Amino acid sequence: MYGTFVVGIVFCVGVGGISGQLVRVQLQRDTERRVDLCDRDSECVPSIQYCNTATESPSKLKKCGYMQDIVEGVCCPASNNNVPNKRKRQTSNDSDESDLDKALDRASPEPIKPFPEDPSCGINSKTTSSIMNVQSTTASDWPWMAVFLETLGYTNFCGGVILNRRFVLTAAHCFKKYTKKDLVIRLGEYDFTMKNETQYIDYRATDIRVHPDYDKATNINDIAIVKLNRPTTYNTFIRPICLPKTNMVVYKKTAIVTGWGQTSFGGEISDILMEVPVPVWDHINCTSAFTQPIFRTNLCAASYNGGKDSCLGDSGGPLLMQRQDGKWTNIGVVSWGIGCAEQGKPGVYTKVTSYLKWIAVNAQDVN
Image (tube, rainbow, N blue to C red):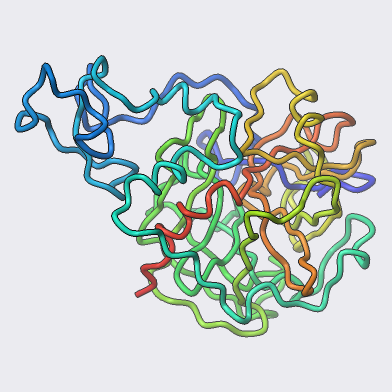
């Protein structure tokens, strides 16, 4: 975290061979791309209606898993594809809704059921006005926080939030290195130096659902959902977060970042869960702050004068905003940044409202 120092929440992944080493990804160019199941000259599309079959027999089209197997599609020759190509979809800034969420409406035979809101979600005793600076929290302040630990050494490398009893929301880039065998998800943690002060519970992952259109080069669609190996039990220290409504006003309002990230850029990660208030920037000011691409599915947040921001080690953690009813909602996922808490360089977040349908599809098989 960064106040008079840095907020520990930007985007951080473990790299290299040193256990627990944290590196905030500063938007490096990465030529690696997602491997499709179709041949090089064809692309997986949601159904045969998107493929011009005048030159290809429908019976010869290879089947494929479209949108991470949400829909069974077909491999259509690229020249015959009536769906906008992936690169064009990724660089479109015309809509706040992700391309996958828009496509889900077309591809699904029935309307997607909204993500059910648990009555206990987003409830604590905090108010936005009570959080003035970078500061440590108390043990029960943010009970929806999750932390990802590498199994070797149990060092934390990313954060997340509890969606329901079985799923945690986090960032896709957290899994560039780590697989489900390499990590533990801890719920109910507060102070790493204290044992059993919150009776935290550790879980293993049975599935890591990275957004199928996540691009490592631009960090577009930097969002993922992790399935726990068993349902959790809610208590004082473990409770789900609420998700925002699509029409929630967030720009120019104060949000809260929470995490165990670095307290200064290049410094030590925090043993205690920290919090810091940050304003959400207008989208145009956000795009003007970077030479790198900023998408409509991103949010920017940090102090306008520097000094308050997310930082390394907080990747995947939440950008929180309080609703009028007092409940907290997760409006953003810590994604990337340039340094930490530098004036004019806010932290960049994945905008959660752009992915509500994708979350609903991927986080409701709770059994």
